[in-house]
Length: 325
Ligand code: UDP
Ligand code: MG
Image: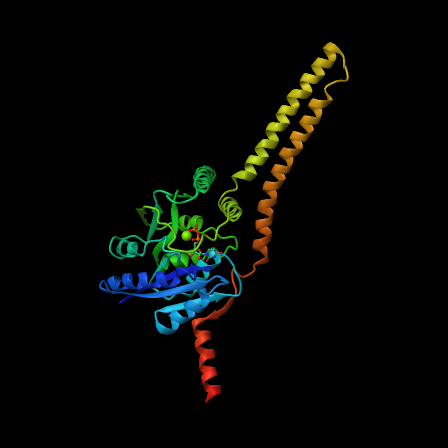
């Protein structure tokens, strides 16, 4: 019997957690017919609602359920990393808690890695039905840009919902970077991947945890982590401006020699100074982004801190029982 670990990052998911658990149990019954048992690993990413209590209760009544609870909200990327470090399975799947990643695909994904010779099965949604149009628009433009400027292949609509072998998980863990961008990391490590497409599914309950600003910052993460083209672009822009300046110097010298030097044109000068300053600030900003990321990397802070797991809960329950005796 092989073990499939399902890693589930959860942040304030009290509305869906039990629903998710029941759906996975149904799927697990089907999977057990093909010789797979499951381990369900909830990563409570510092939730402020009842998520931790629900995960704790589920782990007490079902031994297949484990949980790790962070000391605060560290983000989905850190949750995935923690899951990969702590799971025990021969095969590993990563799924959202909100049922936007259909559990019914697990069997097909498992088949792809066990019988079809793939190392990983990844999913891609073919549409974004139900998502705010403005978010879809920016997401599409983002994928176009990042595909142009990065050597890593980014797939439009790719989800973090993946199933892969222990070998792939070990490869992902070899990338200990602090600023993580899973979609890029998955592509960067390579391996033979089977893509499975599906229609977008909406959240079963609760709300998305991503604000527009949060998504914007996360998208910058992807660019700085997987491309240095913006740096080259700012250098190129500097060179272009030098050439333009040289042209104007020649033009002004020629005009002065031919027509003298009437003092006029200060508004255009002011505009030029403002424009060039703007471009300089923009380029400095790009440089600053890379510097900031490098600064954070050099601190080597841990990705996450654990406050509680199913084993610490079991220990403290046992201690309570002993004291009462
Ligand atoms: N999530 C998390 N930490 C966070 C934000 C989100 O663990 O800081 C989890 C969340 O509980 C869910 C998954 O990441 O299981 C995807 O989040 P969400 O559904 O809000 O994102 P969306 O599907 O809207 O992109
Ligand atoms: Mg979601």
